[in-house]
Length: 67
Image (cartoon, rainbow, N blue to C red):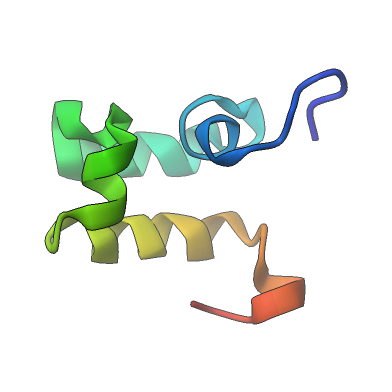
């Protein structure tokens, strides 16, 4: 989606313009902590919100289906 950009976890979760709308929803739910990858991956309240984000992007659906 982003020529010249390394598609890694940080890019997918925090930077990719393709998913700006989904990221906005994530930020509305988690506020400032939506930009903290350790929080997104480990906090028991953040993980379900993160999975909703991942599903809403559709990025991994062809490989894994809904997660």
